[in-house]
Image 1 (cartoon, protein in one colour):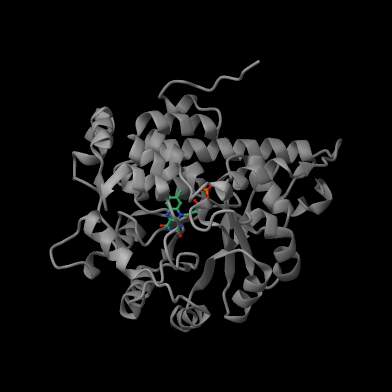
Image 2: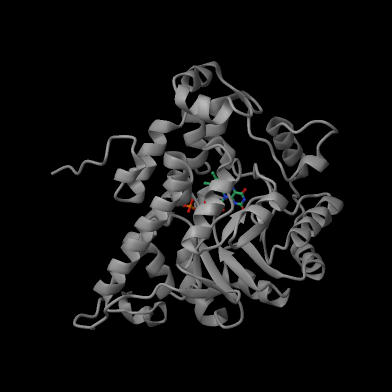
Length: 389
Ligand SMILES: Cc1cc2nc3c(=O)[nH]c(=O)nc-3n(C[C@H](O)[C@H](O)[C@H](O)COP(=O)(O)O)c2cc1C
């Protein structure tokens, strides 16, 4: 029998992340939904990020007398109520008004960290005063060293403790849906403009109050008086550093006193190198399948990286996490925590802060259920013995 998903628009009726995804799809204009959804080129890596979880099979322990499972963990010395961090994503203001703030507040309520992207639409300094929770900052190490230094100083002045440096963008991945949706950079095609008009609720909520979202943390690097995301995107396009190298990470390590996390590591040798440059953590990540196509998923590298280096640095992983069980599989393979990108964005697009909170509650409930079914009370009891290889 064919399974049907929820077909309405009320995020409270979503019973899993896929339901939220479908609500998001109905709510957003196509260009915006595709921006969230797409991968690069043939989207092989994007699909692999999901397929990998189906190949990991549990060997549960029965009659374990678990009671109430405890999903608390510690990441960089801070308590997290779930082993989950919201990943940095740009342009969140396109999904919901002040989307970054909504994500950060939902994360704070759930007791987990939120990562603000360099290309976010909300000021870091403002967010740090408004959100009573852990806010990490993600840095795109651009060409202009002065801009890097300013962004790092901005993070330090705002009181950020954890800096996530994205290492896998020496050039943008070939995101071909963009070429189809736009006739020129940031210029939507006529058919896509008509599609926007067919989403009046989104237009009214997201675009009408304050106009198109802006890159609030890049304002000082744009021409005076210009804040538009269009100019911001053009600036970022000129600033991608094709020569990005390990020496840049050494330099950042010298400048940044807090926790340093390198995001975009995809092989054991690079994980070792991260330890050598003094990183506190890494994110095994293929950028949600948006950069190099046909590459491994971070989860596939976990066993090797975690067993060799797991006691020397914090090993985080992302890519394709849509179920509580996916998170637990990564923890069983040695991860210290998991970053979620789209799973949080679907909730955001479906219902703002409340939608993200609903998604996080769904993930929590799934994790609690699977912990009981596995026979584990704490995250520390998860391990390779529960997985059939
Ligand atoms: C819409 C979107 C925007 C993203 N923007 C950024 C970004 O600004 N900086 C960054 O380091 N990663 C960015 N990423 C990658 C995410 O941080 C993360 O690696 C990825 O989403 C994880 O895969 P998942 O979406 O399947 O959970 C973005 C991903 C998406 C889907």
